[in-house]
Length: 426
Image 1: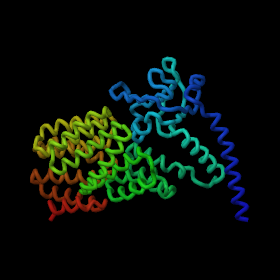
Image 2: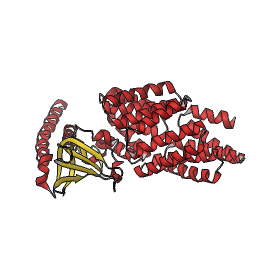
Image 3: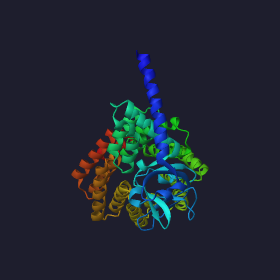
Image 4: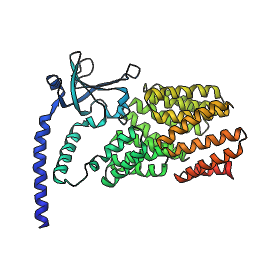
């Protein structure tokens, strides 16, 4: 009886696949056909021929031109700046030569068809997107008792991650790994979320699993960057440099200038930690030459500020921290803005400008608490502890150092917990 039921189920699924293939073939059109469907909602597919992120134009639009490059584009996908952050690493998603499909309302601009896209759910890689739609519909029709939400846990994880809602990304990522244990995307999203929440050992575990499950160089570049950062945060500089070197090699193979900029900046951080400040500044200035993305520029300015601070030039450091905050806000990077505010507050403490220190530390800490980033929340407590200690407010200082110690321990960051204990609580 079970064999008959199983066979019938397979036949039913195959019939549904055949049916949905015809349905989606009818709904899907080529980029060259879009001009005939102005005012209609369709799925338009084509090859990315050119892209442009107008970061300094009004609305910060991203233009993805299909089949032919600008100004001879056949069809354009438009993403406004307020929506760009929803796309995890947009430069990788919209790389030239990739086949993609976009679903939405087709409009016309200066005689050319275009579509405004507001989220990742509207974009699919051509063959993978069609297959997933057919598979999803088959599951809904055959397994009506299965939760629809489960089939979207990976996408939900990335969407929450992109919107910087890391607690919800964590829940979706854990569900995704449970449902899809052999998915590199599931383990990758969960690993990156662990990084943002300060669980570095857990992040390394998930990202190394993702590494084994993917052959995509694009994905490996991201994975190596995050693993390098995790090792750096744990104080393992040798492994951090190893993974950053792997990241740089891949980005150069891909001719990805933004990725190369990021890798150079990461390597600079290792030189900084080793005390080689001139070498660090050399790599950071190189990295600036490869990017015009506000978020990336903000990160580099923050790193330059840290090097100047370590060199003893605090005023120069403050100048670059303020630049980092400015560009992070321009990019809509809430997490980056919070991080750079904490760093600037700590710097003002060193300059004994206590009112400015209190202002930036309070703003940064509240933002990190809202994001749920336990690692940076702990750092914020430590910064406040140092601020109060410098002002000889020993009771308040001990209270905040204890908060920092307990939170570092709770997230498994024993090296920072031990440092806080040995330096301030012993």
